[in-house]
Each structure stands twice: as C-alpha cells, then as structure tokens.
Length: 128
Image 1 (tube, one colour):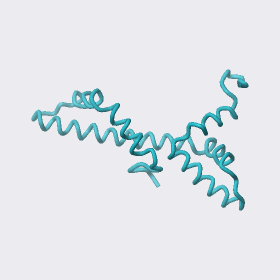
Image 2 (image 1 turned 60 degrees about the vertical axis):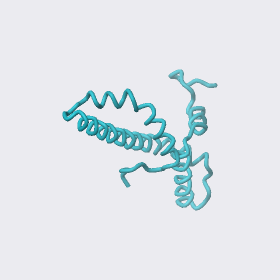
Image 3 (image 1 turned 120 degrees about the vertical axis):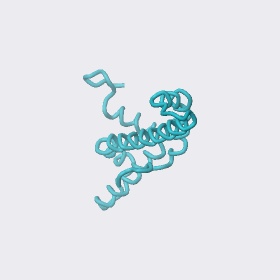
Image 4 (image 1 turned 90 degrees about the vertical axis):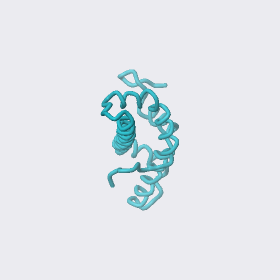
C-alpha cells in the first residue's frame, strides 16, 4: 500500500476502500449519479467513474445531510419520550428524561434506524 505524504493511504486506495463499504443507499446514489453522468456525456460512464466522481463532488454533502436528518429524527424521538415521561410524572422532567432515553434506547434506536433506512435514499424531511 503506497502511503501519501501525510502517511495515509493514497487517493486511489482510499477510493477502493470507500466503494467496498458503500451502504445500499450510497450505492443507489452512485447509480443515480452514473445515470445522469451518462446522460450528460452521451455514453455509459461506468460505475467506477461515477463512484469516483460522486465521492469527489457529492458524497460528503449527501452523508452530512443524511446524518442531519437522522439526528433530527432522533431528537424528535427524545422529545416525544420526554413529553410522555413528563406527563406521567405530572411535571417537566427536562434533560433527565432525555438522558434516560439516551441511556435506555439510543443504541437500539440507532440499530433500528440503520436497518429501517438502509434502503432509503432520502430520509423524512430531506430537502429536495
């Protein structure tokens, strides 16, 4: 493995590592990107070329937006839990209820989210 001047993998090696770990949603984004690239160029550009271009130009923004949406969904779940627990206690439990949700449910919620939205390109509330 050829190292870059910073001691990390070269760009090509990093690209192949990224392609091998694509989620289904990411793979579909590359396929979508491939379709539009091919349309613009008037020929099939191939998955590898489209993936390289998607990584360079779009992957970070797409992943950041997906992460923002996931966090917003999680905040909504925490708010619902806080409201329910506060109603049961007949008082506002504040951050204690949020911390309780995190301790009790955060890990299983994340597992649920990864499974439920593995095949979903755009999460609820995503910008168009």
